[in-house]
Image (cartoon, rainbow, N blue to C red; front, top):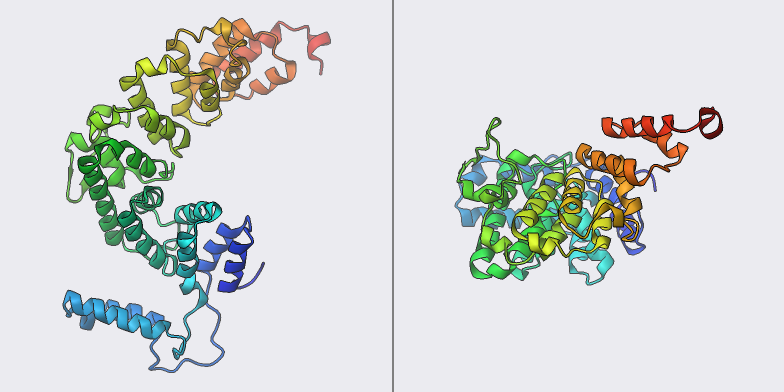
Length: 394
């Protein structure tokens, strides 16, 4: 599909479950409008003129109620089927998002969450996202509400943003008020709702600029004002400083939300928070975790998660290194040789020296390219034990 995309193109991509739907939709929302077939009359009221009107002194002098009525009335005129200047298709993107929101199909729900995460915050999709944010709050649909709250709070508009920082700040504050209300009225659900927000932050988040996330992590430090958090640079707290977290006692009720957060989070600071909470509050529970869960964690390419795995392997008695093969942990632990964490790679290298000295030549040659000193030294030492002519060769 090339050239200018139409609303019908995007609707068809959604109906057919096109794997490129999100990419096409983002392109559709930011594409240039086609040239009008006829010149636009000078006095014609267009969408751009509606935007200019909202910034005019004529509009700003009105009362709040009058502004609301004028905004709705003039927008209806622009969107009317018989409008003098038809609305460009890209400004009808809200219809696609609204259809995803209304649908009960699980694939549409998944597509909606991906749209929330990736679509540019521009007119069109923004109209639907703002509306869904309010409706999800009213319905306590925390899966969608959490995705929107994290997106608005993350401080990024994914390019071409047309939503003001003040608007995003207002919505972020509203999201924290919702979390605070949940903690007071339904305390047993607070951790689950917080997890529904936290899993959507990515490593591209402007961490110091967040409001919801910094409250979850550092609220009890009281180091914030109306303008935001004052975290500083020299003494900046870390997500692992869980004594500063909001509603700390509510995180201690069950490890289940933290297990979910550790596996589903998309950013290392959030994973670091989950690991710190588990180590501090659920040591007894961690003594009974299954090896299969540890294997799943090793599959997460994360510094925080891999360092947590090493902590478990070193602190849970049943995970003796001599039993790793019987527990199906031998190969997963060796995969930590390629971990992004220097600590995890060092642990795996020490394990390999005792329990995996039979690593293949190909594997050892590959490990020579590691970023970690301990792994490169392991490869050199084990390879030097092989016969250069018979075992290594050119």
